[in-house]
Image (cartoon, rainbow, N blue to C red):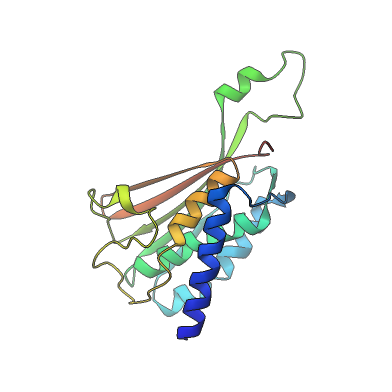
Length: 201
């Protein structure tokens, strides 16, 4: 078990180093979002049931196929669900929801006589929220830092490398997206906003 933890830590540090230095390549593939979200969420069902938590999945029926890196995308949602499982008390909910939003800045760039293939006026939004726990406002600015842990809320004493959220932020940025966190009214919600097709520099 200790060897596994050390291996995970080394791999996470290497991933973080590549992302920070900009040497991590993007391997873009078409991803059917409904299937992708369902598949990742289903893989957590047994763990969530064993902890007497409830998983609620709300997937928009109008999600597009996006071009993205499946390895990064899988890691982002898996880390966020791991985090939610770690901190959600028994009897409380974990909610995963998706939608698309219109990006007005991108809409203005589109040609007036047709659609551009290089840019999309839509962004994909993924929310992972867990209920029954709140991160103190003073801790929120630090949660994406390497090795930072919010004191006293790891209910299941699960541990980890302390790099999960740092990786999520870097991978989201790597895909051309943004990440937000809000914690209030006894719930914590992470929001990922990603382009339908990231630009490649």
